[in-house]
Length: 33
Image 1 (tube, helix red, strand yellow):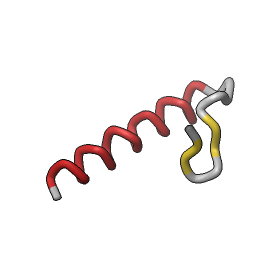
Image 2 (tube, one colour):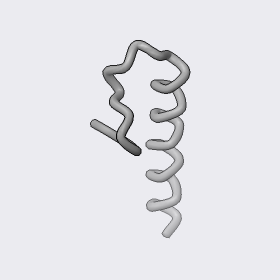
Image 3 (cartoon, helix red, strand yellow):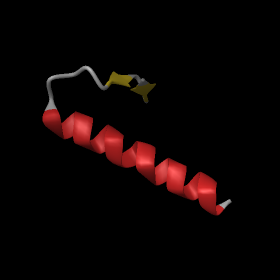
């Protein structure tokens, strides 16, 4: 999976956490809509 051009495969834990957070955030919004 790739969000905003940044891969989850990155070794940067901060980026990985941020992307996972965004993923669940958008899923939550989609469920609310």
